Length: 361
Image (cartoon, rainbow, N blue to C red):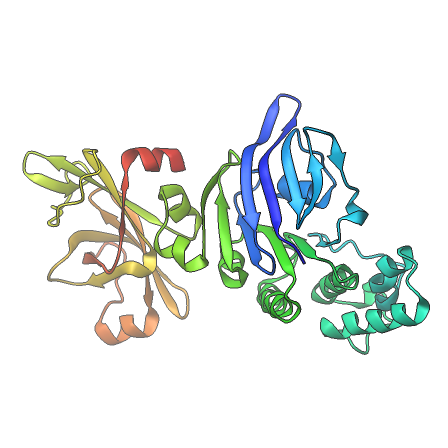
């Protein structure tokens, strides 16, 4: 196990800069997730740590060992870095059994036969595949194949486990199951995990800390899942961590109101040096009523989703989403039809300046 230290790392492909002057520290034993949109460079960073790519600038260390340094040309091969890696597409050998796939790294390392068998069986059992040792990948489900890949990555007892979108090809139920399995294994083994994904739910569910990266390869915020969800650094982070509403609130001669000619906003926003601010909130933060306090709105769309009612509502010319418990809607008479008037209240929201929203888009 080891700290991962990334110092001033840059990567370019021709004239295109993917990463620039990036700094990051992942402490020993932490489950750390790099979260960002497709194409932002997160997989490139993972490959740099693994040794499959060479940095154009900067240094990467695993524990006390410098494994890559652009300044003096240091480049430790992937097989000498003490890492395990699981890819998005499983990458299991189709002609090998479960046991042979898992044992393959140990065979390459010329581990004695008895030790190889013991460690292979332990890894197979660790991921819940006991009794399937002689099966071929074609006889396994997608989730079971991913477990084989995970066991193969763990059998070498790596200091660091790298996970590159490993659950993308699984259906929703399997993704949820494997998410819990990975977190459980990480806690049991105490191995350092570096996970990259664009899936916010997975990132929030398994991580000790999360780093949010934007489309330009910049780190926007690093913190615990609770910190970045409840206290986002900017509008980009807030918008990337799930479905978000941004309601424009502008100052005019009479005070503050929603949009250009929308309803009045009674509570004065903080002074952020901007005449137009945005109230950011989740669909679950919306409180609907038929009359009384709140902003005047009109239901544009009403969708019954089983456990939830999903509403699209016009408030002062801006469309917002609202998610309410279906049972509550039935009990409280909040089953709105399209075109009906409603009142919109907010249980919680964040203020963002106009410049922050522009940067997020």
